[in-house]
Image (tube, rainbow, N blue to C red; front, side):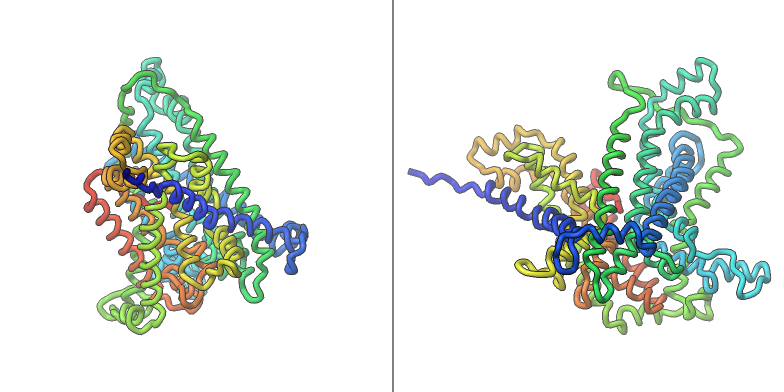
Length: 562
């Protein structure tokens, strides 16, 4: 009599549920408990009273809302016309502009803020120096001041509008041309058709993009920390971070993080509702291509305006980083007389914290990409094939980190794992958990979409031949999803390289990453090393994306997200 083959699927699936509880449920539970507790652990509402009455907390909250609303409006005003020009007109270089907008997402927002600091600092900023040379203004006069709330709004908008652009451009690309043709046949002109047909149909997507921009500005930590703190004001995320200075006020940090979490959840739900509302419905399988609007003599003017807009997140910041990295004096334009490799040598050979930070970053990126990719693959398989009872709960847990801002997750993990029985603070494990959790929703969604291309009959054939679910997943499904697996791996890898919000709460002197090291160097003023490390981070990101797209063939496209 043959022994029945052991099926390890059920224990594996149960272990995944337990792991998600460690990653998500426990930190958020501790966050909620701590927010309603005092230093002695007694239940209290005093933390929230302080949060909404103390000016040192109220002012950052109001400032954050002002910044988020302003960034949202500016992004829509920039991204909507740019998306329309690229998608619906005969503007030259439209493909180049679209590619450059996507390329701007490679730059981490906090690196962009550092670059704009080099460009627009009142005294040493390169643009201000150029303005003084041209106009003969005195040394104490400046054209730009990045250390203002307006400067912070500008820097955030530079690296947020691409998300709105992508949504709007994709919506315009999919819009049926027959609707606009019918308007023209009834006598409406080009601009009347755009006002009455195109804009109303794209409006739900534009509003959803506005919410994306609002959430980005609401939850980012790096750019406000680099620009707002020197300017003498806080946002909500920088205020939460400041509460961890000695002595740490973890109960106030938790209370400050909870409203940020609830607001993010509400706005994500509103965004889903907006994206779910279709402004039009296509009856039938095919529809005409969108109408192309002729700009005539304005074609090249439009292209020039588009390239000018892209100079803000791309051309000027990269020029500033390259200038600072290879100039003897960071505030001077690099030239034959002052070009140097000193900053490169200092960063990689003399700065003792560089190599440990690089090693930690690469180790965490590879570990998170490998473990997170495998975890998201198994979860997507369970949900897509309804492989176990409660798969909907599993889907909810896998997507729920989307609503958790990075700094909020960092606070939750700090509260959950700084004491027994699972004391992880001070190790790379707590950072690994944070990074996998942050990247899990996007990785799960990528695999979930990929599973639609794998017919269940292939797996059923394997099961009929005696294979367990786990073996079927490894031998049949995984090879068919090779392209999606490579793309997801690289997506997580790139995300970990860029992550700062959670890492800045959870790092110690032994577990610094490159992003944290850049933030630390900002405090010490080593701008040359900051420029070199920032360029190295961007270079690693670009190399990984190119390698992924070539390794797995033309079907793979790796995109960077926030």
